[in-house]
Image (cartoon, rainbow, N blue to C red):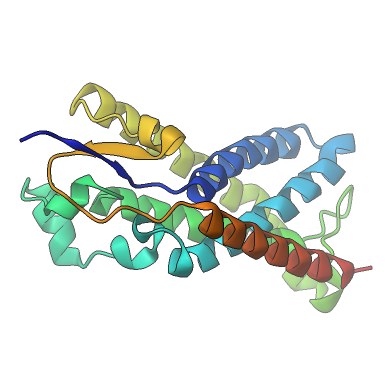
Length: 222
Protein backbone atom coordinates (compact mmCIF):
# COMPACT_ATOMS: atom_id res chain seq x y z
CA UNK A 1 0.00 0.00 0.00
CA UNK A 2 1.40 3.37 -1.05
CA UNK A 3 1.85 5.97 1.64
CA UNK A 4 0.24 9.38 1.52
CA UNK A 5 1.57 12.66 2.80
CA UNK A 6 -0.63 14.01 5.57
CA UNK A 7 -0.39 17.41 7.24
CA UNK A 8 -0.14 16.55 10.94
CA UNK A 9 1.37 19.64 12.56
CA UNK A 10 -0.07 22.96 11.46
CA UNK A 11 2.23 25.96 11.10
CA UNK A 12 1.08 27.69 14.33
CA UNK A 13 1.89 24.53 16.33
CA UNK A 14 5.31 24.23 14.74
CA UNK A 15 6.13 27.88 15.36
CA UNK A 16 4.95 27.53 18.95
CA UNK A 17 7.15 24.48 19.47
CA UNK A 18 10.40 25.94 18.17
CA UNK A 19 9.84 29.36 19.70
CA UNK A 20 9.22 27.71 23.05
CA UNK A 21 12.43 25.69 22.69
CA UNK A 22 14.39 28.89 22.01
CA UNK A 23 12.74 30.65 24.95
CA UNK A 24 13.47 27.81 27.38
CA UNK A 25 17.13 27.83 26.34
CA UNK A 26 17.15 31.60 26.81
CA UNK A 27 15.57 31.30 30.24
CA UNK A 28 18.12 28.74 31.41
CA UNK A 29 21.02 30.83 30.09
CA UNK A 30 19.87 34.17 31.51
CA UNK A 31 18.78 32.58 34.79
CA UNK A 32 22.17 30.91 35.21
CA UNK A 33 24.18 34.03 34.33
CA UNK A 34 21.87 36.38 36.23
CA UNK A 35 22.99 39.93 37.00
CA UNK A 36 22.36 42.39 34.18
CA UNK A 37 20.57 39.67 32.19
CA UNK A 38 17.71 39.37 34.67
CA UNK A 39 15.52 41.90 32.81
CA UNK A 40 15.88 39.69 29.74
CA UNK A 41 15.08 36.65 31.86
CA UNK A 42 11.82 38.35 32.81
CA UNK A 43 11.02 39.35 29.23
CA UNK A 44 11.59 35.83 27.98
CA UNK A 45 9.41 34.56 30.83
CA UNK A 46 6.58 36.84 29.68
CA UNK A 47 7.05 35.47 26.16
CA UNK A 48 6.78 31.92 27.50
CA UNK A 49 3.57 32.80 29.34
CA UNK A 50 2.18 34.20 26.10
CA UNK A 51 3.10 31.00 24.28
CA UNK A 52 1.60 28.79 26.98
CA UNK A 53 -1.70 30.70 26.92
CA UNK A 54 -1.72 30.41 23.14
CA UNK A 55 -1.11 26.65 23.28
CA UNK A 56 -3.86 26.22 25.85
CA UNK A 57 -6.36 27.85 23.51
CA UNK A 58 -4.91 26.23 20.38
CA UNK A 59 -5.31 22.87 22.09
CA UNK A 60 -9.06 23.31 21.68
CA UNK A 61 -9.37 25.14 18.34
CA UNK A 62 -6.17 24.29 16.45
CA UNK A 63 -5.43 21.63 13.85
CA UNK A 64 -6.89 18.18 14.44
CA UNK A 65 -3.68 16.58 15.74
CA UNK A 66 -2.74 19.63 17.83
CA UNK A 67 -5.95 19.46 19.84
CA UNK A 68 -5.68 17.97 23.30
CA UNK A 69 -8.53 15.60 22.59
CA UNK A 70 -6.33 13.85 20.02
CA UNK A 71 -3.66 12.92 22.56
CA UNK A 72 -5.37 12.52 25.90
CA UNK A 73 -4.92 8.84 26.68
CA UNK A 74 -6.35 6.68 29.43
CA UNK A 75 -3.88 4.61 31.50
CA UNK A 76 -5.02 1.48 29.67
CA UNK A 77 -3.96 3.01 26.35
CA UNK A 78 -0.55 3.84 27.77
CA UNK A 79 -0.11 0.26 28.98
CA UNK A 80 -1.12 -1.15 25.60
CA UNK A 81 1.40 1.14 23.94
CA UNK A 82 4.17 0.03 26.30
CA UNK A 83 3.29 -3.61 25.56
CA UNK A 84 3.68 -3.02 21.83
CA UNK A 85 -0.02 -2.98 21.01
CA UNK A 86 -0.23 0.60 19.84
CA UNK A 87 -3.38 2.00 18.26
CA UNK A 88 -2.83 3.29 14.67
CA UNK A 89 -3.53 6.85 15.87
CA UNK A 90 -0.46 6.61 18.09
CA UNK A 91 1.70 6.79 14.96
CA UNK A 92 0.17 10.06 13.75
CA UNK A 93 0.33 12.76 16.41
CA UNK A 94 1.68 12.36 19.93
CA UNK A 95 1.99 8.78 21.17
CA UNK A 96 0.93 8.10 24.78
CA UNK A 97 4.42 8.63 26.19
CA UNK A 98 4.98 11.75 24.13
CA UNK A 99 1.59 13.10 25.16
CA UNK A 100 2.43 12.70 28.84
CA UNK A 101 5.73 14.52 28.34
CA UNK A 102 3.94 17.37 26.57
CA UNK A 103 1.42 17.80 29.37
CA UNK A 104 4.17 17.59 32.00
CA UNK A 105 6.28 20.22 30.25
CA UNK A 106 3.33 22.58 29.80
CA UNK A 107 2.26 22.17 33.43
CA UNK A 108 5.72 22.71 34.92
CA UNK A 109 6.46 25.63 32.62
CA UNK A 110 3.22 27.27 33.71
CA UNK A 111 4.17 26.68 37.34
CA UNK A 112 7.64 28.10 36.70
CA UNK A 113 6.20 31.23 35.10
CA UNK A 114 3.60 31.62 37.88
CA UNK A 115 6.25 31.46 40.61
CA UNK A 116 8.40 33.89 38.66
CA UNK A 117 5.56 36.41 38.56
CA UNK A 118 5.40 36.55 42.36
CA UNK A 119 9.05 35.86 43.17
CA UNK A 120 11.46 38.23 44.94
CA UNK A 121 15.10 37.23 45.21
CA UNK A 122 15.83 40.40 47.23
CA UNK A 123 18.79 41.10 44.96
CA UNK A 124 18.09 41.74 41.29
CA UNK A 125 14.52 40.75 40.50
CA UNK A 126 11.02 41.19 41.84
CA UNK A 127 8.09 39.72 39.94
CA UNK A 128 5.35 42.11 38.81
CA UNK A 129 2.74 40.37 40.98
CA UNK A 130 4.89 40.08 44.08
CA UNK A 131 3.07 42.95 45.78
CA UNK A 132 -0.12 40.91 45.78
CA UNK A 133 1.33 38.13 47.97
CA UNK A 134 2.86 38.01 51.43
CA UNK A 135 6.62 38.13 51.96
CA UNK A 136 6.70 34.47 52.96
CA UNK A 137 4.76 33.45 49.85
CA UNK A 138 7.09 35.46 47.63
CA UNK A 139 10.15 33.87 49.19
CA UNK A 140 8.65 30.39 48.91
CA UNK A 141 7.91 31.02 45.22
CA UNK A 142 11.47 32.25 44.73
CA UNK A 143 12.88 29.14 46.40
CA UNK A 144 10.82 26.83 44.20
CA UNK A 145 11.60 28.84 41.07
CA UNK A 146 15.37 28.75 41.62
CA UNK A 147 15.94 25.52 43.52
CA UNK A 148 13.32 23.14 42.14
CA UNK A 149 11.43 24.37 39.10
CA UNK A 150 14.38 25.19 36.88
CA UNK A 151 15.86 21.73 37.39
CA UNK A 152 12.55 20.04 36.67
CA UNK A 153 12.36 21.96 33.38
CA UNK A 154 15.94 21.06 32.48
CA UNK A 155 15.28 17.40 33.34
CA UNK A 156 12.12 17.25 31.26
CA UNK A 157 13.92 18.90 28.36
CA UNK A 158 16.75 16.37 28.48
CA UNK A 159 14.29 13.47 28.65
CA UNK A 160 12.49 14.92 25.63
CA UNK A 161 15.72 15.08 23.64
CA UNK A 162 16.72 11.55 24.67
CA UNK A 163 13.31 10.22 23.67
CA UNK A 164 13.63 11.85 20.24
CA UNK A 165 17.07 10.29 19.77
CA UNK A 166 15.78 6.88 20.91
CA UNK A 167 12.94 6.95 18.38
CA UNK A 168 15.33 8.12 15.66
CA UNK A 169 18.05 5.52 16.24
CA UNK A 170 16.17 2.52 17.61
CA UNK A 171 12.77 2.77 15.96
CA UNK A 172 13.85 4.65 12.83
CA UNK A 173 11.07 7.14 13.47
CA UNK A 174 12.09 10.73 12.75
CA UNK A 175 10.02 12.96 15.04
CA UNK A 176 11.95 16.12 14.21
CA UNK A 177 11.15 16.30 10.49
CA UNK A 178 7.35 16.52 10.84
CA UNK A 179 7.75 19.28 13.45
CA UNK A 180 9.76 21.21 10.87
CA UNK A 181 7.70 20.76 7.72
CA UNK A 182 4.44 19.55 9.26
CA UNK A 183 3.89 16.37 7.23
CA UNK A 184 4.08 12.62 7.79
CA UNK A 185 4.02 9.77 5.30
CA UNK A 186 1.27 7.41 6.44
CA UNK A 187 -0.12 4.19 5.01
CA UNK A 188 -3.60 4.57 6.47
CA UNK A 189 -5.77 7.46 5.31
CA UNK A 190 -6.42 9.86 8.18
CA UNK A 191 -7.94 13.34 8.37
CA UNK A 192 -5.22 16.01 8.16
CA UNK A 193 -4.88 19.01 10.41
CA UNK A 194 -6.32 22.19 8.97
CA UNK A 195 -3.48 24.50 8.03
CA UNK A 196 -4.59 27.24 5.67
CA UNK A 197 -4.57 31.03 5.54
CA UNK A 198 -7.74 31.29 7.62
CA UNK A 199 -6.49 29.05 10.42
CA UNK A 200 -3.12 30.78 10.46
CA UNK A 201 -4.76 34.21 10.65
CA UNK A 202 -6.92 32.92 13.51
CA UNK A 203 -3.78 31.71 15.28
CA UNK A 204 -2.19 35.14 14.88
CA UNK A 205 -5.28 36.69 16.45
CA UNK A 206 -5.17 34.27 19.36
CA UNK A 207 -1.47 34.98 19.90
CA UNK A 208 -2.07 38.73 19.84
CA UNK A 209 -4.85 38.39 22.41
CA UNK A 210 -2.60 36.28 24.65
CA UNK A 211 0.22 38.82 24.37
CA UNK A 212 -2.19 41.61 25.31
CA UNK A 213 -3.38 39.61 28.33
CA UNK A 214 0.19 39.04 29.50
CA UNK A 215 0.99 42.71 29.01
CA UNK A 216 -1.99 43.60 31.20
CA UNK A 217 -0.84 41.19 33.94
CA UNK A 218 2.69 42.63 33.89
CA UNK A 219 1.35 46.19 34.18
CA UNK A 220 -0.54 45.23 37.33
CA UNK A 221 2.77 45.36 39.12
CA UNK A 222 3.60 48.84 37.83
